[in-house]
Image (cartoon, rainbow, N blue to C red; front, side, top):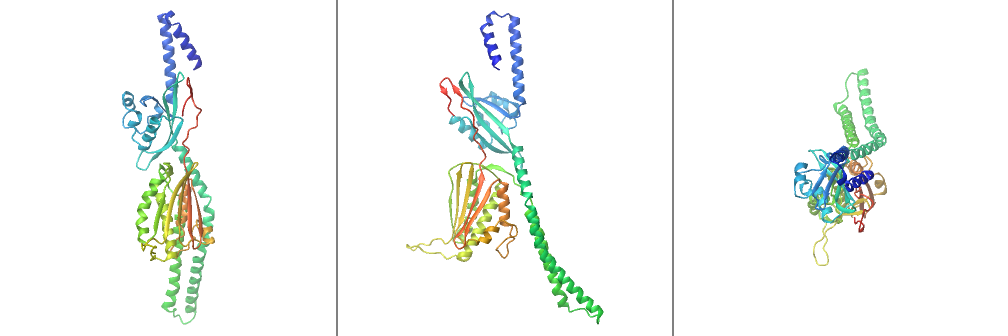
Length: 424
């Protein structure tokens, strides 16, 4: 490129001395070189978009034509007078580009999820870089990369890691199955013994109640076996997450609005405190809702266990009724992590329960399956996150969910102009 620049400068200085044939030859060489450069740019899988200072589209390679969700064809945008982001149909991408233009931001980038079908989501990484011409800022270069395969590989890797835990789970199921099988075997042997005795004696079969008693036990244990197998299949079933880049605070507000009436009906106060950061993290909205609702239901049970199902409502010094029992949800961000902190002032858990809370089939409830918190753990891991819990008997329980924030900052060297170093 440097040789071409020197050549062009030399030609421009001697243009008046060149013959028509020489000028035609130079023009043909430049045209061929331009076609080659355009061919190379079009062959790059990354979408390349060039806009001027007013954010009007100047150029777009073939790699971006199916990357950005546009309201019209590229050819019409090139001929249009509106800014590029005014043609973008995705709200998040449009807001990002508009914000970068209005605030004169460059060397920045973000990831976005774009729905391309009813259940299909593509992930795009978009970065904005300064376009410098003759050491002067003349616009921006926007790079659009499809990172869907990268995200899918990460999901597949997590699923393979989850398979390693199946050995321990299968061992637990084998232990659970042994007891019902032992009971079935004993009662069938007792029936067989009774029938043999009858045949060898007077031929009179045992009393009906005697037979039914043992058969009832056998049927009950068969039902237990069936439940164990069904629960096992549920526990090992892979979590199918349709991940999107979503605002977790907005999702949490909707979820809390859903279960707030139930808390209020039980005189449990719900308090929320959301961070101001408008981050987006990879989530499946349905699975995320399942996580929060599951923890909320456990909090209700713990508070009712501590205060009683009909929670007494105390009065303060002014005689105004207040709440007994509290559910608190807060969010925060730090570095590249998003935190959800959920705590209640219920009955809390023993150290033994705390150690086994995420294990399949472990439950302290008479009618519980022991799979609720296991599912919560699996979902959070599917989000590449982490979940921790602290609890004290008689005091309460606190959950801390950590979710990674995708790296959005594109780190580039600052550009320089005649006036010095360019501003980012």
